[in-house]
Each structure stands twice: as C-alpha cells, then as structure tokens.
Image (cartoon, rainbow, N blue to C red; front, side, top):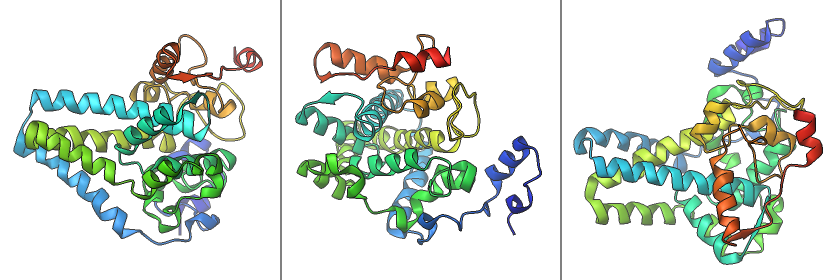
Length: 301
C-alpha cells in the first residue's frame, strides 16, 4: 500500500516529501499510465548513463570539458528556446529553414523529436497537476515525474493531433520519426574531431547532465519554490532552476502566461534563453517575440 494513500491529513510539506520518495504514489487514476516499459528506448538510455563512467578512462581533458559545457549551453538553448517556447507555445515566428536548424540542434540533446516534445508539453499545460498530467510530481511522485514516465510505452508515440500546426512540415515529421539520427551524427563528429575524450565528455556527460537538468522542471518546479500567481496547478518560481536551465525556472510565471517568449517576467529574473531570443530577433533570424501582457505584470508586481 502506498504511503500517500494514508497521508491525507498530513501537513502539505510532509506529503511532498513522501511523494518525492514513494514509488507507490497513486497512479492508477491516470489513463496515461496503463502502458508497459519500453525496453527498446530504456536500454540505450541506461547505457548513456553508464558510458559517463568513461571519464575514469579518458581522464579530465580540459578541451573536452569545454566542448561539453558549450554543447550543454547550445543544446539547452535549443530545447528551451525552440522545443519549448517556439514549437510548444509559438511564442515567436521564424522561417522554415531556421525552424529546421534549431529542431535538429534540439534533437541532438536526445530528448526525442520536436513534435513528440511539443505534443507532450501541450498536454501538460492542459492537464497540469491533475491525474492526466503524466509527469506531475504532485500526482505521481518525484522519480516518475523526473524520468519514469518516459519509460512507459504509452508515452512513446507522437500525438500528431496535438501538433497539427507543426505536423504539416514533412521535414519535422521525418526528424521526429528518426530522432536518434542527429545524436548519432553528433557522436561520430565528436569522435572524429577529438577522439574518445570528446565522445565521453562532449556527448555522454553533456547529454546526461542536460537531460536531468531539463527534467528538473518536471520534478521540482511544481513542488519547490515560490508562487507569484495563484494558478490552477502547483507551479513554482526558482532562481536556482532558472540558472541551471537558462531561464526555465520561472515556472509559475510561465504557467500564468505560457505564450510569452519571456519567462523571467521582470528585469531581475535571470532568463538567458530570452536574452538569446532577443538577440536573434535583432538580427531578424526570428520575429514577433510575444511579450508579457501589462495586466499580467501588474497582477504580479
């Protein structure tokens, strides 16, 4: 029996602690949890983590570590700026070529294709922190929301109905179908450029750290932090998560107004992704950055 089933009268903070560690947190209510483990995807995922131990073999190569850090920042920007703010929320516009370039950079982060990512994220906003939210830590606990939900075969297919505006682009559908191709090309390029140390640090270590940093928004940004807006979900704002994810930590802001290109609503809220998008807009690579409405800013001041 799950501990959370008998915790209804406990203080909220204690229930959150239990949800963090209780692998038996109530999940049966969600129709999206009816699948089985997709081992074809899980085994390579585990292997990537094991491959990080290769740092013991290749040692602390300074050049490789710089490459790892650079790839972390570039790919995190592609995930936060394009997979999230562009593909999921259409927070700005761009042309088809730029759209494809950043879709490919995002795909190199091994977080599946842009259509799959956007489809799940749109569902998350529609059902945030309800039993139908497949990665809500409030509903399913820390570990499931952080990474467990990805192992479920039910969550493997791309729901094209959710992303009909994006599915009309054949190149995005192709990239989504063969999402492993870009990471493989990146891995090969790193080996050819800098040998095994570039592969271990630049690909495996950088990718695994990037994956878990991104997933912290699912697992932590709905349980820890401050709430500026009284939204229908448990989203929170966190400077720490904002630093790690280049601005995604202002999650309560984001759930209050998801359509904005900016998640750090105020000048003192660090949002490196927005600064990058602003620079791209200045050189006309992207256009029409959607601002935060004045009424939203005034309500949160």
